[in-house]
Image 1 (spheres, rainbow, N blue to C red):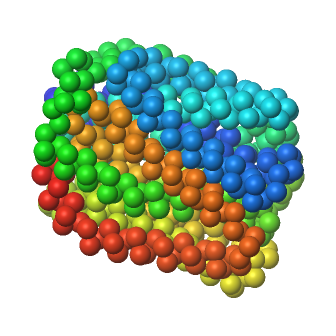
Image 2: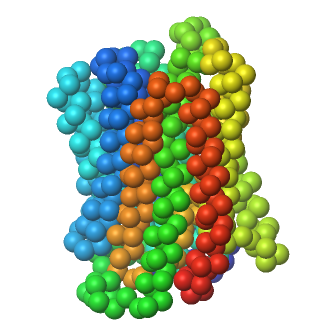
Image 3: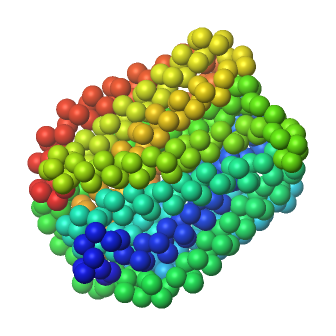
Length: 433
């Protein structure tokens, strides 16, 4: 385990190896995701409801496989080999998307689904291994790591989205493959800094602990995670609208300016709007990190579950912006500012929920099953994204204002119930938070 005990405020250097690996892995993932809905409806000719459903299945399965990937790393291959295997499959999948054949399209999706399973949960688990229990740097380390995710998320639509929409769909997908290749190379090159981190499978003792010796307090902590995951699923269902209905809104209902001549002089690609969220995260992450640090120094930092309640409130407010956009503009030539406001509030919600949730899993997970529980954390994305895809099928069946208002009501109701459960969660955590 890397502790950097001599530097109580400086983050472990190995964090930045994982930062770069995840940055480029997410560049590849979000580059493809930014194009997928538009590619299916505009190039493959799928109907909107069918494309939303398929996108939901893809988004769901891509976050279901990290459960298997976590078990594979915990029990058999270890983290290093599982991450390398996953990254290789993702790279192959992106390059297959550059081939214009429908059977190859489905094969590529399968490679990406399995590949994400090998890399996604395990990278986050390795970040947790950089810190001793009780290390105050952990939450801030995960927030820095999360910023790497979103630098990739910012660059991906700008590069892959532009190439895909303005030049060739398949060139955009190939650029995503190049990004994954860079991420894989970053991980391999950085092994020297990761030398002090245990990247092998769980030891025999840890396996026995994970199977047989889970204490009563640990079961309580696992129960905390299971309860919280229900609310996290709802958050991701709303967040997934970024690549479903909010992308469709950007394409059909938003006025987008012309690009300068050196970028082809065409209308700004609709896929670029998916980068708003990542741009905000890059700007806001240091500010949120500084806020938590300042509150911690005064003994006022909120608990992780309370921060996550705030995340649901942020989601509700983001869709309230879109309710106003739909009703005041009639859904015709709406300003980009509406989406800008929506993504700002959604991002504030995300920053108080997602990196905090990753950190919470590593705090509460018993020895020997950390990878598996991190995989279950990403299962919340799986269920949430599939739910979001299913709800997206109703985009053309109700008014856009009604569609967005539904998200406001559900998000606020979930936040209220979550808030009422906080005393119970604190008791079940047995002081681990």
